Length: 425
Image (tube, rainbow, N blue to C red):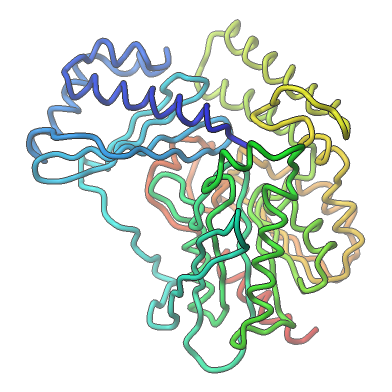
């Protein structure tokens, strides 16, 4: 869970850098950037980038309200920049208070609205504004509802870690909207909602001994109740589709809610989250070519925090670890997604991208071993897809999330086919 303070600090840093660009203080802007960026980006190149924007869009006017999206250890600050003729969005990525990426729309083209991928048929469904849960954590939601008559199978999309909107937006990408409209085009109703930690960060932070029950599970159960109660959805085909942390929690969610008839796991971790965090920092340090001393220091710092999470026990109190209190980690320490999945008898589809550096394909090993012979389980490894299940080549990087893409169509097809077969069970 990203803290409100961390988000505010990242916004301040990103805004300061952007203002320095607008004021022509290019040397000062570079001082906020990582050594790796300063090696590859000169003052003249940075000035040229800004002047190119001014030439295309006219004199700079003002910055708008920034927002933050968190993925792994990177905070993406999206900052609207209004020029005389056009408003664009700057994307400034920050890790540990340092700018590690600065992006503008490709070829300095104005930001456009999300465009549907070619597997979406927007004439096949309606998008309905609704809500999930109740006060003090009532959440805005969107239901994509097929316009064919009858009761439709119903999917609830469950976010990964960190605050997220209903589209699970990452830079210009909207993976949950891709999934929702892709599945709705195939006759599946899909409910997606804003995450509690995005809409009510202060209220969540003020909870006593919060766990994933508060962060995620309570709202999933409320969303399931919405879909069960509707006359146009089929209570015999309620499916939870979780991504990342949402996928890791999906077996636990299903074990505690008999209305859930199947689950789909997209990039589910099977190893302890602290171990994965250490793995990620080692990988990212390798990408950034940090000097060995700096790389080792950052690894030790993450490992130290990870050790605290591993040792957290129920009833522990103390400062936040990785942005979450000891109660959060103590709860997760008692949960094994694989062994919980092993006891489930409902259909399960487990999908994993081979280019995912955040939840690597090695996480499938325990699923394959422990669930071998379980007729209710399907496991599919998808070549060339990253953590967002979007295609690419070469090693996965945080920077690729800044480029517009879509969830691969084969993911939508696999989920839709899986749901179609539920009627035979």
